[in-house]
Image (tube, rainbow, N blue to C red):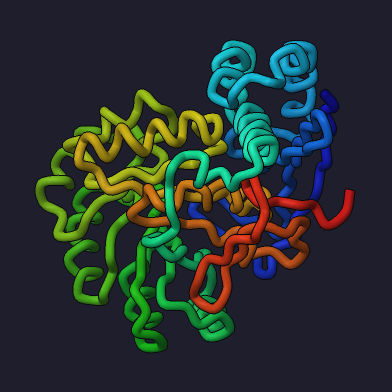
Amino acid sequence: MELKFYPYNLELKNTFTISHGSRDVQPTLIVSLSDRGFTGYGEATATSYYGVSIEKMQADILKIEDLIAKNILLDPEELWNLTYPHLKENPFALCALDIAMHDLHGKRNRQPLYKLWGLTLDNIPLTNYTIGIDSVEKMIQKIKEFPWPLYKIKLGTKDDVAIIRELRKHTNSIFRVDANAAWEVNQAIENAKALKELNVEFLEQPLKANDWEGMERLYKESVLPLIADESCIEESDVEKCAGYFHGINIKLTKCGGLTPGKRMILKGKSLGLKVMLGCMTESTVGISAIAQLLPLLDYVDMDGGLLIKNDIADGVKVYDEKVHFPNRNGTGVELYEK
């Protein structure tokens, strides 16, 4: 078994702003696992908001390199169970390792990962395209530069409804609104009424992640469906969200990879929740992993490859309003350069 790391700086096409802050470059780490002539690739982005750095991810994975090598022939879920106790405080590193192991597993078994899971691509959702917080003029410009049937609009300003009203003048596409926990409950109730009239499909994480009292009231009074993001990080959060949200948005990096992500999807569905998978502006490596779960999803936010200028890999791509899978095994990923 050979373990390698490839750190990259992904350059964003536009400054990306949400209520937490802005960025022009997204650092990311590719983890490579090679064994018996096959190589699997996984990815996790670094983020100061969650205290995750490239160096820390590498260091934590290197501490268990021997454990990985000794168990490299196990199924990914079994390896995840062995590595979780060592990486549970760093789910981003766990995610990158788990995706690499799943990609390697698919390549060893000479099948795309979704086929190994018994899934088909007959009915899969289309990703939204994200418009970050900016001046209204620049947000309109971004929409015009990238015509798309489905946009996620990042909000969290004093003029959120006015922003959507202006954007609506320039496109008939469906809007999804992500407030990134920036609203108060009364504000969210009133905003929902106005936004429903502007063809907004749902509200993502309108209140602070721990405002369960506010969410209980909002769940009863909102005229739009509510999707949890920051309130649904790990597996134990899924059940908490039932009765407070209508759906959940799962991030593989936050929960620790495909292994727990798939379990969260199935748990959410069993509770009657709509299920979405989101990204953290990953390259095609991370996006290709998300794509393997598309047949299980109601919604998806996998536009990372569309938002960056210097994608680092070939794999599952999104263009012409469709998701295109390569004729390759595993997650379908190959790095352009190493």
